[in-house]
Length: 115
Image (cartoon, rainbow, N blue to C red; front, side, top):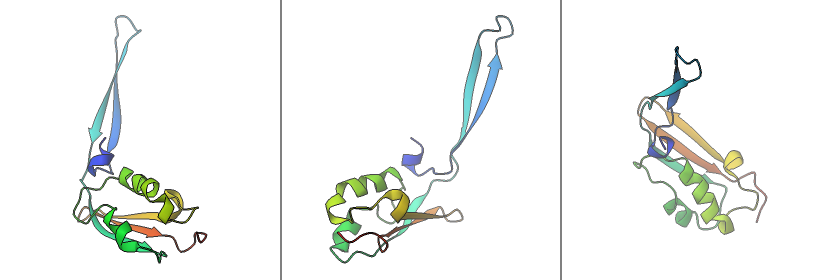
């Protein structure tokens, strides 16, 4: 949930408490440090000659809270416009700037097979 709200540096620290009387119960509490909320800084699409403007409109826009799940949704919704072997792991780079709380999104399809 935190990642969908731009908290990409969220960390969880478990804290355990053992019930000393029964020795059968353990309470686990997760302390969350959400860190800084990130927003989209810039978005680039490289290596596509067909309709990049339409694709850019369907991506997160600069200033919006960053949600990494939206990039997976983008790939699914635009599958017919993208190379057949396009994937988040291979074609999407996210560079974070922790000083100003922004991410740069780069979609690079130059090494994909041509559709």
